[in-house]
Amino acid sequence: MTHLKEKILKYKSAIGLVLLCLLLSVITPTFLSVSNILNVLTQISVNAIIAMGMSFVIITGGIDLSVGSILAITGAVAAYLIKTTDNLFVSIVVAIIIGSLIGFLNGFIIAERKVQPFIATLATMTIFRGVTYVFTNGTPISGLGETFGFLGNGKVVGIPFPVIVMLIIFFIGAYILNETRFGRYVYAIGGNEDTARLSGINTNYIKTLVYFISGMMAAISGILVASRIDSATPTAGTGYELDAIAAVVLGGTSLSGGEGTIIGTLIGAMIIGVINNGLNLLNVSPFYQAIVKGIIILIAVLADKKGQ
Image 1 (tube, rainbow, N blue to C red):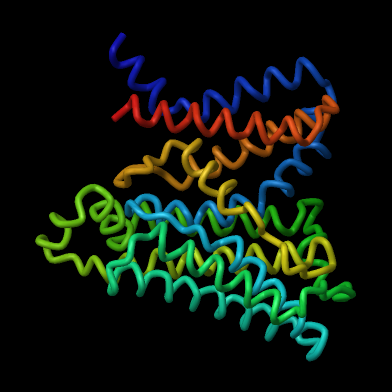
Image 2 (image 1 turned 45 degrees about the vertical axis):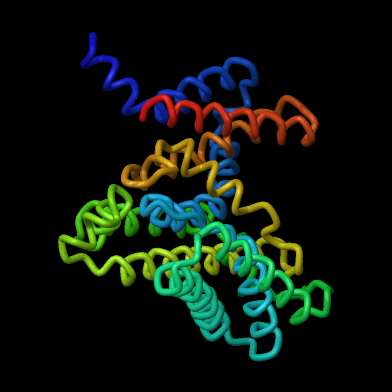
């Protein structure tokens, strides 16, 4: 019985997702259609990519509130460059570099200057949201062209391109976290940073890198969002940090650090996407969706506390 209970607790997120899908398939038959499943995966792709980077951060015991602002500024930079240079490669690379550097800045402030992650990333969230407004002059950058639009709206053998990007990123993230020394160090720091430091791990370097990864993921998401809606707006990404944190927590990652999986984060993002999609199919007001999401996050946090 104890062994069964441990199994259930270990796979509670996956079990919850399956039960949720079964329930919605009974309530609304269109839920399990191929087109709707692809729609759900497309809708969650941006949040899932941000959440993948957030997983590394939270496993170390940190938090990153700046990802929404990074999404906005990098989306705006990519949009500006594609309009002025018409060079897709340059637009993507420069945007990703900027997002990664902002992440590196977060990591440096937290690791080297010993500022609490919540405060440090709250500050950079505010700063770069303001920078986005200045850069765009408070107006959207639109009319980005078909080539750029393919990134957010195109399909490869019938699969939406953002879904392909998401799956590739999660495969790489899972490999890094599970199969590399860097991944083991990430878990070690989250488990006990002082012990990790005494065992010879360069904790400052590792912590800086996880925020670097988080910034990079936010930048990729910023490009996809701008491409999907054919516009980069200064308000893009508002609240996305909360959705990403929710996906990570729902996926079984502990907010106190030291445990969690990339696959769990993907499942967490899917749970949020399935709930939103199901409520939309049932014509439930978006206002109620926010309430439901908040309740689910609270339940997940309480479950995490109970399991500790």
